[in-house]
Image (cartoon, rainbow, N blue to C red; front, top):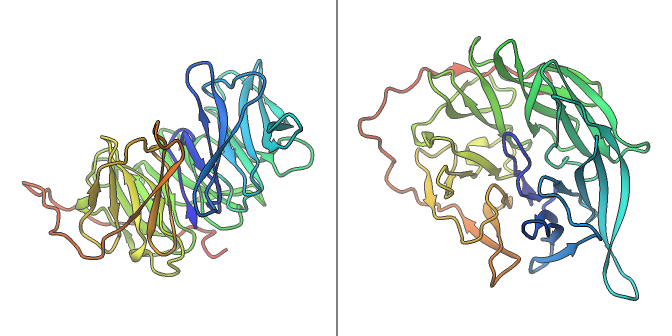
Length: 356
């Protein structure tokens, strides 16, 4: 399985590891917060609490690694501290082990947040964004504490992985009043353009599938912010389908394993009202579905076979996964009354690093 659970400004409240085997969230309420790890690889999901002697703050971030440990990012005094939590056996019963990884100094005007899980499953990265420069820090998987791996002029947001090894990272960079997605090569510390739809348009990358090259984009190049799609490294234009006029809908998962077939990838979107839309680029319609009760919104994962798995938690089922399949038979096309004039297609610039 593969997963993408990405929000534009912050980590989702429920985050799934790169290979789909584990997930983590902050459970509890009020001042009684604790880390909870979900195991998803077995026949039934189950949750393991990872409490410590002191409750976690509500603004702490968690990120699961593929070995079952959970990275936590805490604000501690004037530092951003990082640690790994894991369950341990003891004579008195299960306990939580903690491995301190070091910290990054907190600076005024600099926002530090975790990036989505790295595709390699063992490393983890954080983004420290300021008005003049943004730094990518490796905070797990390195030998001597947090290490800066790239500095990017401008304030960056977002964060989407473009490969399966955790080297190519797309960020949305605001520079001189315009926001453009750029590619950051973490191995070399190099930055290159990714999206250049129009000279003065804001072009953000929301989601990507490294297998097929499918890109999900939000851009105001058509005259207003619209969802569109393109293919990494392709010279074909970005398309802005009418059926994706869904307001502030946010794609949160894309089907992996569709090599060279981006049009067949299933895409799941969270609608502004909290429900779900399922869509394929080859289709001219979306399937609208009510979100399951207790859905941990903004999170989900597709299997390569096209089944979408949604995590949920209710008083009766504290750890559950609901499976959905994108219907094969198309319904009548979605129509808007009156239909707006279709926007003029605009080109997607080929990413300089797309062949790597």
